Length: 315
Image (cartoon, rainbow, N blue to C red):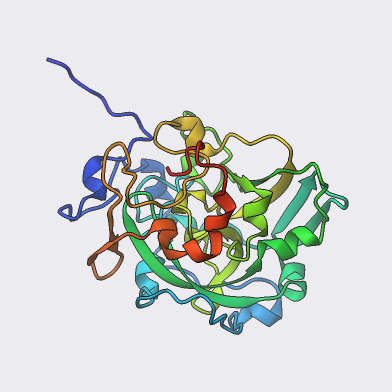
């Protein structure tokens, strides 16, 4: 009899089906339990301007088409493998120090710079955008994110003409992230997109959610979100953004390229090898709804892929 032992990175098929009552409950890292805290501490950065909140005008161009997910659901059901493979990592994530925080921009740019988070909050055009997020595991949520266009940040350093890709690197803090002990993962977490995708107005650097500073379990203090792509493309707790000429090998692509590709655009007609992507479970309500091509953002991004039909554009 063939006995198959699942590999640590694999997602059980039940995690993507509507019948399952528990999604993503794979082997929990025991070390994470030791880092739990009694409650979620209030988050505040050192800047007095954001200590009481992170208010910004809402951009009405981006309509989610359904209700905003309750904050308690969006902030307690999270994928962040640096803290553990279980969805309930929000307690362990509070160990991540959020201040001081800097983001380095380097590579093929005219002016390499390192930005303090406080400086970004003062100089970037902050706004709130209500975006959908579609996880490759077939669940979704709608969140009011506060942030600024990625294009505005790249403009501040001046990408060189030979830059073709943008590489995102997530923080690796062993004292706060028990998942880093799992040596079979290719840490640090790396994600990437093309410079054309980065320049698209939908590409958003997120620093807050629900009018507050972004909590660490959601990728705080700063992350990237491109809502037409599956959620694993969104690098969290970013420490470095590099402009490069060669396509980077991203985290999940390095682990299992047959399941998680570079482009990873949402497409309900292209199934994951182990589950359908035709529908998604709405976080909080549990409702099952049809998934839309490009997660419903095709009018903004479909033109990015003209002439790339031979590429594997879907995860």
